[in-house]
Length: 177
Image (cartoon, rainbow, N blue to C red):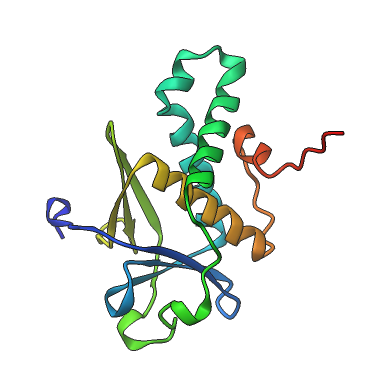
């Protein structure tokens, strides 16, 4: 399939966990038209670390700051995106069933990420030769998807290794007296 013909999906991004498959299920779109994708533990770890790295490297504000402050700036941007969003755990009642014939999940082998000045394009591929669903995300949306992946992998108790210091700092509890 020719990459130039891939139409980006617009709409909802939902994420859940299939205990039976021990995989995250990513739904792109909503209703019967939703594309269901299986993400393995290994791919999820690579995707979380890759997206966090892309967000850190592409931050124009962080790039202008001293090196010791860059992680803090990206963390504040991440927290701002979370505060502005109304993220809530996906209710199983609102998600298409994993076993539905219209939404047989595609096992994702590769995710290609293309960056531009105002958006990020994620292309999900079942193999390097095959083109799967494509989604365009704003910077804030990419922060949300990253947080969803991180939270769901934590709920699945995968204990994924996280490389970016700013992302692991986001989940540390601070107590002030």
